[in-house]
Image 1 (cartoon, rainbow, N blue to C red):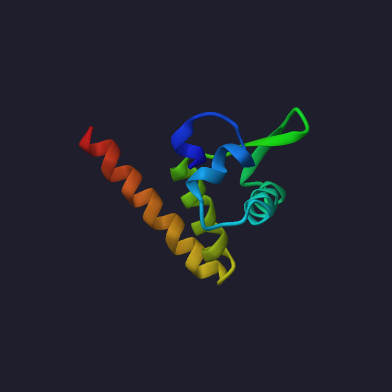
Image 2 (tube, one colour):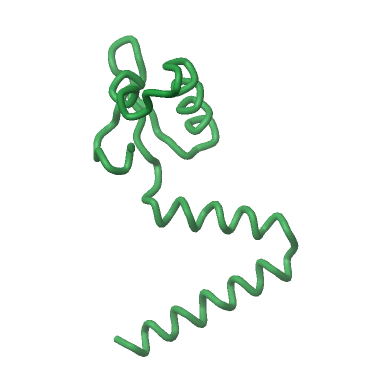
Length: 94
């Protein structure tokens, strides 16, 4: 929802999009994502407004690297090789 709106939003702005989730649950989730570095937040009166720190693509890549990097160095090396290979193919195709 935050990526789709293009602006920093407060919990009360997001609540209608999540009618089955309690306000406090949504607030806790946004706070946890902020503490994990996924969201930025700014003061908006007595509340906080949240916005994504990364684009969708950057976020997906970051989580992928974190997960693969936690497995072993060989897997991370293989991922790096595949990225270089794909980049080379894209450059040759342009």
